[in-house]
Amino acid sequence: MNFFFGHDVKLAQEIDWFFNVNHLFLVCIVASVVLGLYFALHAKTQKGQRVTKLVLAGIMLVLEVSRLIYAYSWHMQNGGTVANFNWWWEISFQMCAIMSWLTIITLIVSAFVKKDNKIVQVFYNILFGVAMIGGILTFTYPDCINGTLPLLHFENVQTIIQHSLLILAPLYLIKVGDLKVRFKNIWMPALGFLGNGCLAMTASLLSGQNFSFMLKCDLFELVGLNIAFPWHLPLLIIIVFALTIIVYGIGELVYFIKHRKDDKIPPQKIVNKNYFAMSVVSFVIAGVQSMIMLLLISGAFIPAIKNGLASLVCLLPILVAIAMVMIGVNYKRRAHGEKFTKNNQIACVVIMFICNILIGIWNLVFFLKENKK
Image 1 (cartoon, rainbow, N blue to C red):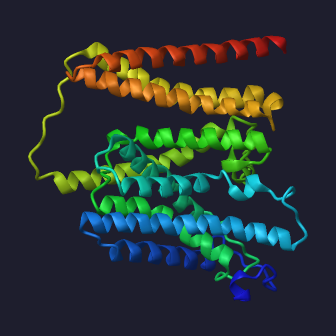
Image 2 (image 1 turned 90 degrees about the vertical axis):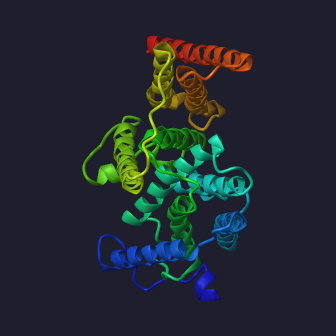
Image 3 (image 1 turned 45 degrees about the vertical axis):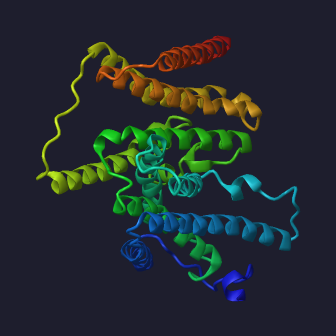
């Protein structure tokens, strides 16, 4: 047991896991785990699928909590105290940590709601386009594997299994028919990346620690790209989201091949072009302007809000994006002839008004700050 859980189990020579035979061995292990579980988890009945989702969520929850407990016990055994335990870093706001909790929540919620629940469908797509991509990147550049410990030590086993489940979960949802990968839904993982960035940036500024490469990207520096904060983020986003575009393209191709012999369903007719144009504008604001807001807020205010509660302002872009997506979806329905209820219309007006007020306040503060320089 000490070999598996021991805090003092160190190898005489550190193992290199980067781009060598060891790396290939690790990828083969992960591929075997993911594919083995994918084909083993049949669960054809609705009850069986519910149980499978809850079991997967339970395993991920145990692994995540166990990681925190293990880190805390190691800290205390080495003379640490509750006060100087690095709670921020160990709880973690890395991309995969955020996606681990989202996967756990999504699997639990999806076990008790209908498959076509619109909010859960958004989460499904975020798991496929963000969580799975994060899991794959973890093993593409395996800096999470502790080379000073044996591969079968708890730290490494926990990391491998947890990140493998991040890859498996969305694949299982596709297998049971809960998730259909369509390119038209790629805005959903885009929203997921924005949300991940807002949470990680807030945590980074509050704690002063570099979560999810928010404050700097060491990988860029290794290849000689010394891009100042926060302008390294657009390049990072483009690289990672390009992978999402690729996997969605593959998913769309598979869907086309699978359904090419089906009767073609005519596209919904646009009965009101003005409403359709308003829906497009809403989605553009949800994505582009919200991302620009995150970059400019963090870049303009980092000296003032670092380690302060004012860092919560970095959550503003995702709130604006969610509101604008809600408006865009409603206008899109209206464009296709669906009627707005009175409550729908009031909600859209109120949300649009609040968003514009928030954006206006942010622009005013940014303008005043820049003029003081």
